[in-house]
Image (cartoon, rainbow, N blue to C red; front, side, top):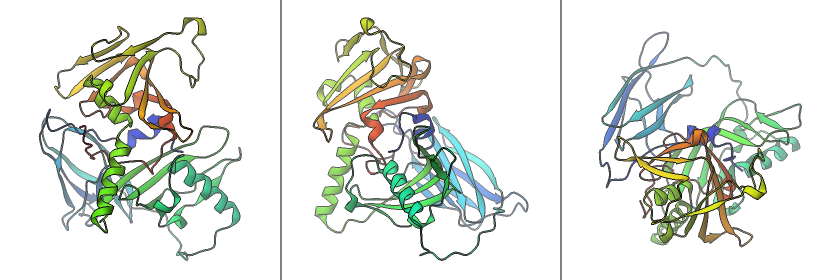
Length: 367
């Protein structure tokens, strides 16, 4: 599974903050130019995209790019070219457009030997691939609706502890006919093994697939909405708008969590206070900030929620615990966290993987 209990390693590089039209309906633009770091000449046909979204373009013959139609947010801009090293830029859009200027790319110095695409993989690779794929997809998925187009690009490096990681970064092309997206996932680092908890970091680009019929289109729309409902973003959207009682949630502030890694709480001191629309515990605060589309959430313990509209495979209620570093997080009014590095997750949502993943510019019916 994708490790969301170590969420700072994952969502940091996937996050896109995009606010709702009702609160901040601006349409913003990111522009820039890509050049060779040594010759200062423009680089055409660079792949430029906002990680975790459907937004992406190619540079023109002058190395220029323009990504428009954006909402205020905190973006991770990825620039890649087969002959150059990756370049990453954090771009914060709040009150206006952003010109990031010139991005100088370093030429890729690694010499790649020509290999046969359909080369034979040994049993060790097959076993490692199955474990890696399981981590990426999470627990709940239909094998028939997910396809790794180019699994052969994955090269693994065995570690002394018996686990394994990547040999070199690689880009997977994934067809998800459950939600109707083609996903390009640039794998930068991962670990699978027993010594540490598995994790994966990378950059993702989404492209909408063309439905073959109106029936398939409707199915994809339903599956996307189902994936959105009960998600972390959906929960925070509901909690900051104080309407969680109406959308299948029960939310609590508690000092008790079965996944607490520190074991710092004594059982006899356990408390669990329900958060309601008209009754918010003193241990939990929702406050305005100077930006009308950002809320400040303060809580010292665990923010725990149960989602009742969809059960786990075992027929149980979905339960997730949220821990905030420094007791504070900031959330945009559509439910996306401003700085996900300040959040740790435990419970149900750590079991979900790329099979249920949506681009962050997806807008569900509730927001």
